[in-house]
Image (cartoon, rainbow, N blue to C red; front, side, top):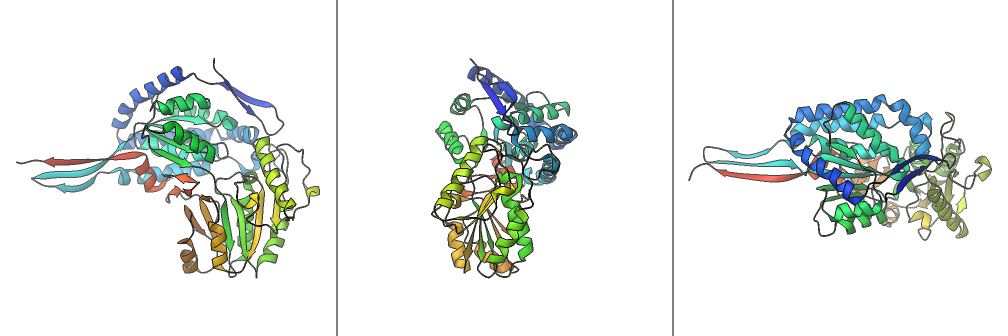
Amino acid sequence: MSKIITCISPIDGSVFAERPTMETAQAAKAVDAVRAAQRDWAARPLADRIALVKKGVARLNEMNDEVVPELAHMMGRPVRYGGEFGGVDDRTNYMSDIAARVLAPIEIETSNDFERRIVREPHGVVFVIAPWNYPYLTAINTVAPALIAGNAVVIKHASQTVLVGERMVRAFAEAGLPENIFINLFLDHGTTEDLLKARSFNFVNFTGSVGGGRAIERAAAGTFTPLGLELGGKDPGYVMEDADLDAAVDTLIDGAMFNSGQCCCGIERIYVNENLYDDFVEKSIAIVNQYKLGNPLDPETTLGPMANIRFAEEVRGQTSDALAAGAKAMIDPALFPQDGGTYLMPQILTNVTHDMRVMQEESFGPVVGIMKVKSDAEALALMNDSAFGLTASLWTQDAQRAANIGEQIETGTVFMNRADFLDPALCWTGCKDTGRGGALSEIGFHNLTRPKSYHMRKSL
């Protein structure tokens, strides 16, 4: 008997959407149909595949007026910020532009005696398990280049954004993508594990929690299925004494609070040189005090609810533990009426230490701890004192100094005078408990294809 996936809206706790899950046999049959269709798709000219992918994204853009309030209902992002399709367009266009060059054969020798070359072949069926926080952007990172490279794609979206995969597939189908090249499946954890254990997919990309990543690895163990795993983060910012203070405050606090702090590369801890610390904290408080927490359907709202009450409870717990251990709350709760549920006020914590959960565990909510540091060495030790490694944001006028520090940070991306940003020309990757693999850029295509070598001897 199938189970029901239910999306509870964080706006008011009502049921926003429900979908029945597929049994394992039914899902396996659907994947078999995708596998059968993939060869013809891979045989199409690259230019045709690119054109159809772009048409699919264009059709998604046409749905934006529906998508924006739908996302507000499902995961709480305020409608004032619009949809995600600007970034979706940028990433799709970049990957389309580089595809011919990156996927071209590497010619080693073409002579009367030999042809030697390396080609890149699509894996086959790519399984995308997508998260709820940026449900279109995170999905398109794999969906677009996978399809362009000649793979077929099966998407399974998070229950909190259960309608996203369905809508994406509908847009691509209406744009003319052939049947069974891109499908959406509603699956529970058990059926997902069954499919992974059965080697149903040729590549799996998962974006989500560390626990979810471990479950994926366990299910795929022994199948030798390549995995891309983008998991947790605890991204630091470091503000040096020569930084542009106003720019650093504006960017880092926005990086900590935007989307109610529910960003993969959001800023979760900030280290500020002792000479700028007091001014940084004062300016940060002034910015946060101007936020409006409320219904995300209200155009005046700048901070919506967290996507699920259990996420809000985790941040409340981290914050309460920190305050009990001596941290100081800098934002007055009276400015942000809360309901004790999904609506969670933003908070800046000072007098924090790395003995506190809020500075060690992923928060994924609108709270950030700020610590005073005296030197690059102290800041570097603190930045590396983490189980995670996705991005790090350095603020200085000295590019060489930033590069020197960047070489020593255990992270996937080093930013200088920037934060919470994804450049499709650069590999989106991480280390430690943040996971493995890499999306977008040339390396993204490498991960979504496999090399095949040809050694052709023409004469004996």
